[in-house]
Structures are given as C-alpha cells and as structure tokens.
Image (cartoon, rainbow, N blue to C red):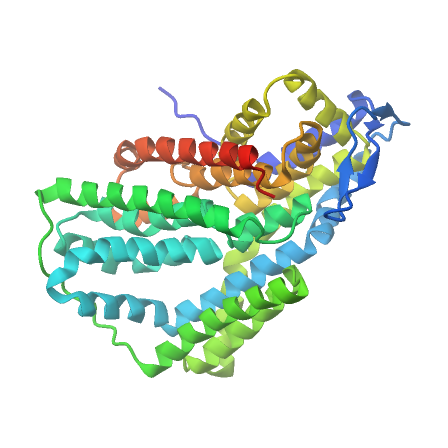
Length: 447
C-alpha cells in the first residue's frame, strides 16, 4: 500500500495563493460595512450590510507580488519570530538551560521521581513563554537518561519535555507566537484574558502531568529512587543568563500593561535580552553575534511561512472576496447556537494545522477570515482566539508535519505509532477540554 505524502508546506501555501487568485475570478466581489467599536476602538463588521462591489481579479503579477507584500504587511510579526527566537538561541549557546536541568536533578537526590512533574512544569513554562519546541532536541540524551533512572523510558522523556511544552503553548496566556500574534491580528489587546487562560492551563497541565507519570509507572511498575545527574555545573554566570531572560519578560509585561507595548517593543526587548545573555554567558561579542546568526537561520523558515500565509490574505483582500467568503461561511451557521460555531472553529483549526504546521503562520492565514465571521455570529473575538489556540496548538502534539516532534521522536528512538498510542487519547481529551473552555468563555463573556 502506497504511503500518502503530504506536500511541502511552502508548496501548499503557494498553492493557496494560486487558489486565492483563481477565486478572485469566480467569487463575486463584495463587502460588509464596518464601524468603530467605541469600547475597543477596533473596526467590526456590521451584520446585514453586505453589498457587491466592482470585481478586481488578480493577474499573474498580483499573484507573484503577494509574497513580498505579505512579508511586508507581517513585518512586525516576522521581527518577533526572528529576534525572540534568536535570543533563545543565544541562551541555549551559553549552556545555561542544560546547566539548570543538571542542577535540578542534583537537588532532588533520592526523590528523583519528582523530576518528571518538575520537568513537565519547566518545559510547559518554556512552551507558554516562547513556544519552545526545537530548543528541546539538544537535551534528548540527558532527558532519556533521566527518564530511565526514574523508571521511565524514552517515550517518557519526549512526553515530559516536548509534550509538556506543546500543552503549555496551546493554553498559554502569554505565548507571543500563538496568543500574542492571534490577538494582534483580530484586534484585541495583547495577552488579554490572562486569568481565564491561566486557569485553563493549570487544569490542562495537571492532566498531562498525570498522563506522563502514569506512562512512566507503566514501564516498571514504580519509579526508582535515584537519578544520575548530568555533568553540567550551575554557576553564577548561568544564573545571570537566566535572570536576563526572566527580566526581559518582566520588562515587556510591565510595558504592555502600563504603556500598551506591542510587537515592536517585544522584539526590541528580546534583542537586548539576547545581547545581555550572550555577554553574561561568556560568549563575547563575536560569539553572541554568531549565536544570533544561527538563531536567525533556525527561524527563517517560520518567518517565511508567515509571509506566504499573509500573501493568501493579500490576494483575497485585494480581490474584495474576503467578505463574500465570510458571508458564505456564516450563512450555513445562521440560526444555529454560537456554541456550534465555536466547536466548528476548533475542528477547522485542527484540520488546517496538519498542512500548515506553523502556529503563527496559521494565525495569519485563518484569523483575518474568522474574526469578522465571529462578529457576524455575535461571538467574542477572544473566544475565536481560544478556538484557534486549542485547534492549532494541541494539533502539534500529534501531527507528523510538526518537525520538532518528529525530530524528538527520532532522536529518542521512539516510533511515531508508539507515540500516537500514548498521546492520541490525551490529545483528544485536552482538545475537548479546550473546546469546553472556549464555550465557557462564550457563556461568561470573556473579552
């Protein structure tokens, strides 16, 4: 039986641009009237005001210009991807992350089994703060050793690290690559709804930690009572590096709360974090610059995906068919409970994430359409973002197009089918929980 091969992501997105251009030739051009919402200051769609406008079909040059224009329109988002990602590449180059892990193991001593929930918390924090995934791959040997010493196996190592990071990212109240980008696109304050998302994260992470501990105990029946710590020693230098990271997040959160800071300020803060961490970590100016370059290289593909995805919207918007598509999506849902639409959004985002494995790229691709749709259906845009986070974010746990997941499984020696047997039930449970959370937000009016 022949295996079904998923086309390269750029091929899929370029195909999306071509399809968008074709739609401008066959879909009637039309628009909704918009008004400024006094409470939020953003433009919202006015239901019942759809009207036709002159057609603007895309030509060959319009199609080709869509990518550079998309990159230009998403420049602030792309800058965040490059500069925040590169800053963490510098932190990783200093060895501070590995040393922090080694210090944790030594501190636990005979209570080494606690390393599993503590590692879950550590990597969930990484996922929640900066969408950590690829950075974990370098830690696989140490994680596999730790998992073995506490009664687990390589699958335990992947689950307590990358699995926890995915859960942390999907339910995060502050992840700039998911909730931050999504909220900016739909026009609501960055990191709004913090308390509600934090409550969802606490429950989801507790479920995942229980799942990982259960899996570890199933290997030998009970965890062992000792662990062999890696050789990396904690030092004042590593403490300064991690203080730079913590300080950067603190500065930005204060600036965002008091001065309305956005993506440009986030990029600027983490440019400073990367520079200070490199110097504090002993890399020197040249070593810090080299680490930045490596980080830029690692982030280039994600940034390119954002530009291509935005290009699809550029073509549809220039052709004045976005609102026609929104109207077509809204019409079948007219009269149905908003809860049905919310659940449908979660399912849609899950399906889209398989061919488009970049959460930030997917936000740029889908939310410009779903945001006005939610206005028409009288669904809070905050709820629309929650549906996006649940569908796209949790899909990273199982989709084979997630390069970080497949690389982790390969490095740890875990087969994909083995991973699915463990992860699939808990993915389904947490996706259902996230959907219920979005519905609860709809019911209580989270904004």
